[in-house]
Amino acid sequence: MRVLICDDVPELRALARLALESDVDLSVVGEAADAREAVRAVGEQRPDVVVLDLAMPGADGLQGIEWIRRAAPETGIVIFSAFGAGGVRDRALALGADFFVEKGQPLGELRAAVRGAGLSRQAS
Image 1 (cartoon, rainbow, N blue to C red):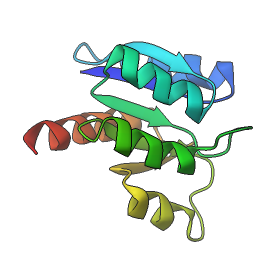
Image 2: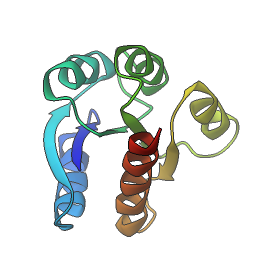
Image 3: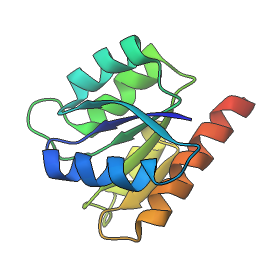
Image 4: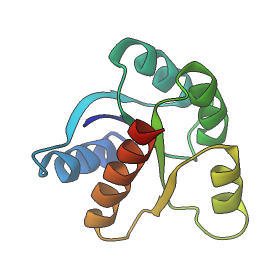
């Protein structure tokens, strides 16, 4: 499964890459630092799943969900964010994200969400 990681913190992108690529069926095909870069990379790399942070300077992840859904509706979206409380999780899911994983959770949850998002989009 081909994955794109979008987070404005390079160290978090590296951690997510390491966690995802520890699974032989997941391959990170690109990285982006904001939602605009992510949409461009989705068009170029055609990933199965985008791992998307919400809080980023410039274009944030909520905007990114909408843009990715329009540009590549077949692409799964997993939100990987520190902002799980309140209505942010519900809003992200309502906009079209497939899964929401809070940063700080075991990284196995991120791998499972990516796999789930990819498989659910392939089935539709």
